[in-house]
Image 1 (tube, rainbow, N blue to C red):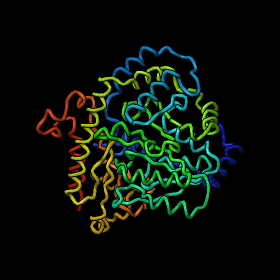
Image 2: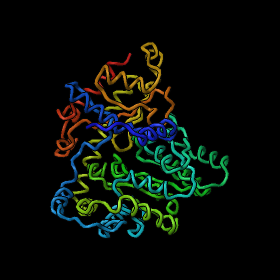
Image 3: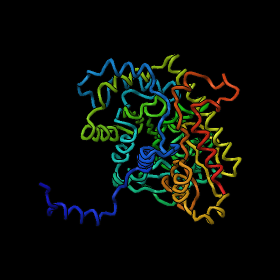
Image 4: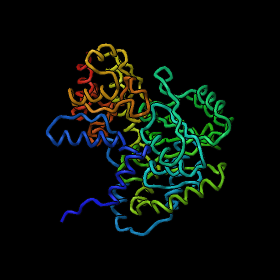
Length: 431
């Protein structure tokens, strides 16, 4: 027998109608589902929309996961001590910053750790560059904090400037502020240069701004030269990372956070309190496997270096093809994203009924089968004709067997057919 909607349902629907703080699904997850639906209908889709690592999970970590599959015990809320030791050593070595194992927190993905930090702060202003990852602003709202957008531009390589931060801090008076910086960035693939980063750090220090450095793509800097923000502002930078990007293990849901001792014990105690009342602990087998993933070795160094080499080559190839077609595109520094700007084609696109980034990506998907995300999903003005392109629609396992230097034309490899076809489809579609 089918139950009839009752008073509880009616009250709930009325509450939904009055709720101005509803959080819609993440755009990045939504485009992935849409792409799957189109593929299930037999349509060709080139998936440049969802930013998932195309490379296989680091092999020794997979073997460790299988060996520890029977581990079922709840682990410490803060994380397995051996794992925290490994994480601290790993990041101290590759980032040149002194991570302390006692100040490391392990969580079910860096996404939830980001939210926990925002929630753990007293009433605060969360400063978010635009463009920025789609979840920062919704997380700030969910945590009851105030999200403030600081708009960047192509001319500043989609980075906020020290002058912007200085001006905002002077206007807003004295209050708790959290600045979120993601480098190499999602959606841009870009990092600030060393001089700009040092200047930003000095402004943050002068005004007491806490910096949340989301450095999940740091190990995938294409030249292995990522500059951790904590190198320039160690006392005020909370850093997050995890296994999803550099280790190819997004679905394993393991993130890490380092909170500097200079920020005191109260903040860390609040983070542990949130963790204990929400996720309790990350899955035991995953933590055991992560102990292996974070153990530096020649094999791990080679795994990282080959990813960097291929991502740099593919990203530069894509950007240069778009540039040649009159689409302003910065060459990426790391990760696997580009943030093309179609403004040079605005007049012709308007004649085709396209005036916003959402209309642009919708038409590209419908008419070419190329899935992208609009710049408006990342906090940009909807009229700004920007998109995020994740150049990951290829089999990374095949590429890891080879070095780009072995080939006269590495972009000609069959596993990169969809990447080449996707860029060519965009170029040919342009008016």
